[in-house]
Length: 418
Ligand SMILES: Nc1nc2c(ncn2[C@@H]2O[C@H](COP(=O)(O)OP(=O)(O)OP(=O)(O)O)[C@@H](O)[C@H]2O)c(=O)[nH]1
Ligand SMILES: [Mg+2]
Image (cartoon, rainbow, N blue to C red; front, side):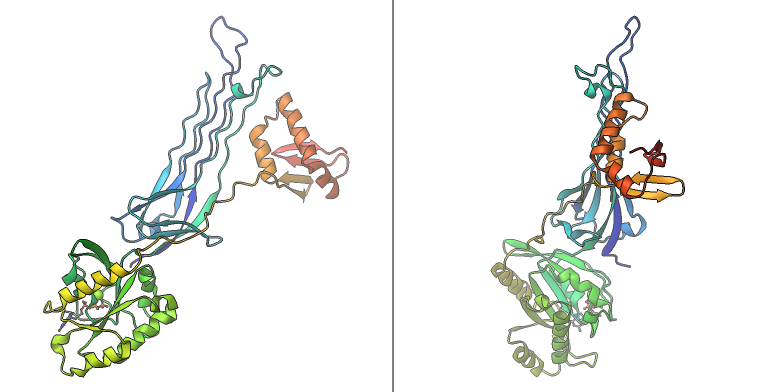
């Protein structure tokens, strides 16, 4: 099965912890603090690659994590940075934040790389905290922890021209005679199950043509197989509307033409507004020659008569596409507001009443945990000051804490006193 949508989970690396260490050497006593900083965690990036054409890989692996930063070491040695993780996706993949639906990146051109999640900062080692007032800091900072984010991937093929029409009208055959592409061709419906791309050369130029599975009535309401594939022509500049002129399946070519256009409107009126070239294929089987005039009258456009099987009309189609494209603006990536994942909350906290007292947790507490070593005097002082300043005291009182109650913060129990 062709897979062009996926949801995956990404997590950049945590920062490495800072190190608490003191210089030691034979005959040297009381060496100064020499704990190095932790390394930053690796980033998560996406790279557009043209040798991938589906998102099938993401059906089986959905969790992606970049490497964590290494902890700092003694002798001022900094921890190694975590390696970035770059995830390859097909060109044309649109990446969105799963929660808000906001576009994070449009992987528009081959080789384009976008980093979407920064790694956590490394914690500072104790050497960093040395000052004239504090000669021997017995603490260091923990690395920043990162959050996992859900993102959706959606492939929207990038091609200049899209071939559309009912099943079995000869779209893939046409692609095979105008380009080097070799799509599967057979005389039954839905031979094509995923978009095929072909590169067409004309004069001084080349352009990309996409052949998608056939559309059927009701497809725009999701009833048919073709509906899902319309997304792959959303970005095209020009449509080639292929009609089976012979009516060999008992349908009326004019009705076919109208029905397909209705599908386009039903999916997205913008699709119906795209310029179209109308191709009457299988004219080798034509018995009723008024068909061409009827389609011309209906569409108000010139109609190209073609027999892909006999290679007739091929040059005219290529030429018409070429000149039509010349008049049209280049394909552009999606326009979107730059999106950044919210940094972990460093301010908020929550007081919760438990069986035997109170517990405080939240982003502010996590951040505090990075910066505090509980059995260290300096550090404890800082901790107590922060708890007061940030209003935890007050919040506890409001939650009903009384003198002597047990309060748990960062896995440590305190007794509450006003
Ligand atoms: N007589 C005749 N047969 C043709 C012509 N073009 C294609 N065919 C035949 O029509 C059948 C369908 O051709 P495809 O190219 O697979 O049609 P398609 O539109 O891609 O079909 P789906 O992928 O199912 O949507 C095949 O048996 C082709 O050989 C033509 O110009 N004349
Ligand atoms: Mg086909």
